[in-house]
Length: 141
Image (cartoon, rainbow, N blue to C red):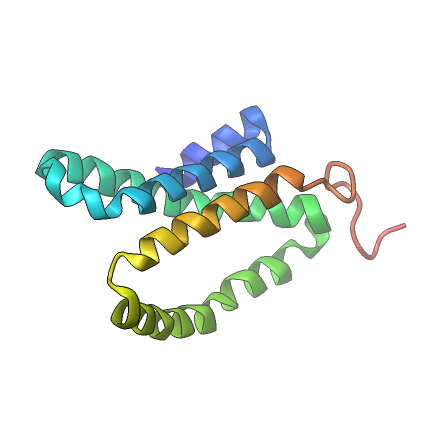
């Protein structure tokens, strides 16, 4: 559902606005994580659904970003590179999360993630399509 929802949203309002909505939603969800346990099981179910919607939306919007930045001819290798790079990031992130949680408390990571979402929101708001509408490629004229 998240891929379809954010893909359709990007078609309607454009990649940049859809990605800003995704980052904003991710920041709000991670920022409220410590509070959710007190809001009841029904709300927790809705909250988890929204979190998975945002995670799935990331997959569809990253494909938009690759095509708009580098062109369709470079899509396969670059999209594969983005998701292959998640392997060391996930392994290192798990160790870093354990270290931070042990040193600063378990909810520190939620607040750090929310802070990084604000940074991401600022960066996305400054993003410009370098090749117009993704029609040119790096190896084209």
